[in-house]
Length: 310
Image (tube, rainbow, N blue to C red; front, side):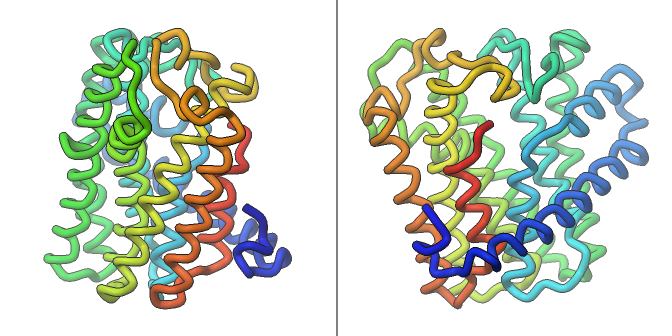
């Protein structure tokens, strides 16, 4: 997917990079503030594991989606603490995903996984602790943005729905159950719309809720988020099969070792890439047609999803 297919000038997409870098810095600062001021009740061992998990180098795609959607819908406040709340949920999912009872991985974001450094029990407890921590951060962030109580509640519900049985947890269970099985494309997409796509889609919708988006805008944001959420996982499968551990910052080739069905296995690498690009084009079309929300930042994030190298 290129700038021409999005009908956004390349110069505008390049300018969006500076805005995204500033938003990323703000989200990172908000995460550091959480670590500095909110972890003491967890005790030193779990707090250290949470800090390690939250402050590791990462793409920060989900908080950037919160902020890009928020500003696309006219939000004018500092939504970085809200964006940080979403990243906390994502970090929890990575900690648990890497545990020996799950995908059993030793490397994440170019360094040892949380359980390799802090131990399995502490890592498991840290992951559990991050869920209510994220909910608390979301409530406080909504309050600081001056949102009514019902909007704050809607944000927390969106976040918890994406992280629970209907989202990441349920998707992870389906993913584990599918190891060694030859899943159809429809079955594979069902797994990944929950495991990976749910929180990505929720990130966009949360930004819209915080900006008091209209129903039409929320529908467009939802379609965009669901499409790029699935595209993100397709790109992940392609990278797992084609990139190195050094490039990815995590162990390459794990899908094959674990006997997982993947998009490259079903569609071929070229077919999987084409599917991801088509989804991102669909996502951007939804924004352009639904309230004129296709900003350069949201277009650039969709482009990043399919063109990233890690």
